[in-house]
Image (cartoon, rainbow, N blue to C red; front, side):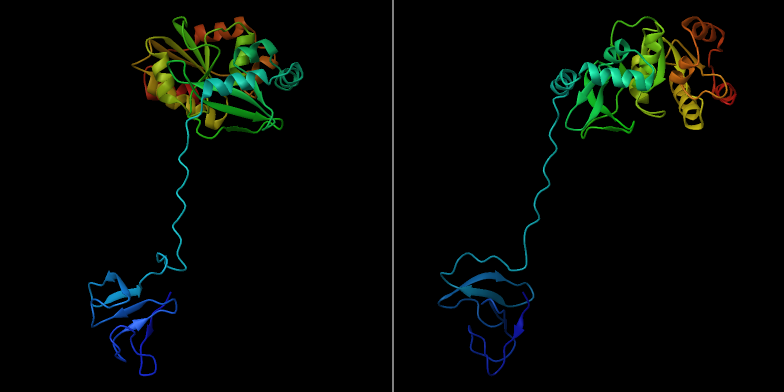
Length: 286
């Protein structure tokens, strides 16, 4: 609401003078001469001079053309365990058969990774864990293969269990590559949420174990494996990197093209133990 200057035809209602003071169309008066007036309520004393009045007895004044911004709702913490149980209960044999066929991995392995189904989102769900085994979020995969996370999710690892691992741990990328390795009887497997994700959680889980990074054979995958290997040196008992042959992108394609448990085990045995960044760069550039 804007202020209007008083004049001879419309003098100040407080002091009666035709100058210096001003008023608004909704009934407020700013008088430059008087601090108190009968029938008027002083609502503001201005540091640069004058007092604003409003008629006494009117409804509490609320400035026009102004509204307080609505506070943003505070995010609530999801009960991930309860949500996971609900999604697992929503998984039907038809759902799992469809995804198993689409990915080329068994329903047994997908169930071991905690597969569920969100009917409202029409998407498959995989839980993500921290190093203690607590669910920290939920990865979704829709019917078209698009991947995203439920709001408030925090990056974690994918796993069929987060305890009682042996001294060696295979580290893949994503839950479906983990499931593919489970199909080949590689029981101690975890998956990262992306080629660069969950580094600190992975480091905590791998602590004092032999780590085998099963890298995707593409630019981002190799770069992510390189960075992870450099982080694990010093905390893991040993670090190795293996990858599919030329022309094969990831573990699922590798296994789909005939890779066996024995072939991958032989590759692990033959792989160099990573000791420094220069060596890691050489290993991942091939």
